[in-house]
Length: 150
Image (cartoon, rainbow, N blue to C red; front, side):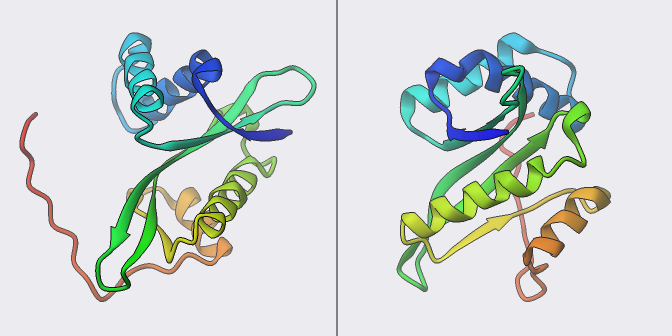
């Protein structure tokens, strides 16, 4: 397995995985939407994507997408680990952990204070992975959201 920072050259592979990620969270398959979204992230330099590739076949195994943010209290950069997805056929092969390594290494290289993430409370596999990696569930702050559109 190889992991590299993805770019527009990887658009098709990342978009296919991103479409699978959206389907995992109950959205209908829509490759065109996934590709447009990923293309915009690359074009606008909105996020950092690391892509895991099978060294033998060249197939995409998974990706992690990080969005930049800041901690005002710490006066430092943080990264929001917004998306982590491993293709079903590649699960239980260390792909998720390798992508978490890439995210951590990127955070350290950019001087970030922390990585933050959220996942569905029902996603026990992801929660177990994150907790085994050292992520701690937040119990001090409540998360609120205001939906602005459907």
